[in-house]
Image (cartoon, rainbow, N blue to C red; front, side, top):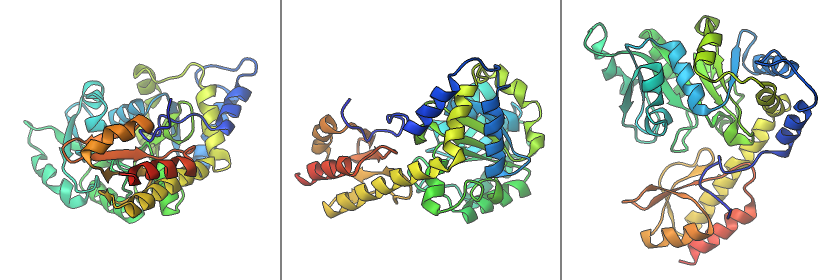
Length: 338
């Protein structure tokens, strides 16, 4: 396939991660997470996030989001999110179907919720004819490539907890956010007040590795059964765990995410120099330029990417751990040719 800026899901697997999978493929091992690889990676999660952290590897990001929400809610509850949130736009109603909750999607200027945005949704508290808000869900980084600072996450967490709500973070690109901010994974999650995290790794150089991470052990009570009932318990879990071990052991997660972010900034700089408007701040590995509509399809023939807004000519360009400077410069050159 031609070089792609469509999604960080299009990239391959980092050689270190692939080597870890190959090592895990030697001989037999206990099934369903009773293996040495899973025991080791759970220690890595505790090292990164705190000793009482409870982490559960799963197959997919949607699975992680659905099960996180299911663990934190009852079927009469509602989840408040941005109108650009993955759980609202790109998961085919999975949270509503499988967790049985209502999503309340709020318009945001750059994909980021604030306490003021959420406040009006609480007017229905105690009204039995309305779904009761229970969770605020935020994406880090957001679907628009913007990043919540630790202070912004803390403000939402304090607001949520002060109103009897929980804070869920969809961390499909958490590594990119932490690399952008120069923080640890813990500083923008647990330390900022997040209750449950969907920790994504597939977009950052793994084959298929996601996890549900609880920072309150009480929330994790019974989650073994929730994961099994939700079809996200891997029989050969050692292969999921081996990927996380490669990612977390020597902070490979940061190396890959920082590279993807740097390639996005190079894209931004090159496109701006070519006179192209960049619609949203470039704070992670996503760039949203506005291109002449007649140029989009010819450019897509050389470098595959998605159109974000047909009417406005806004496209989305995603950089990955394996994006090269040559890829970026070649794309910018084509755009500059007009």
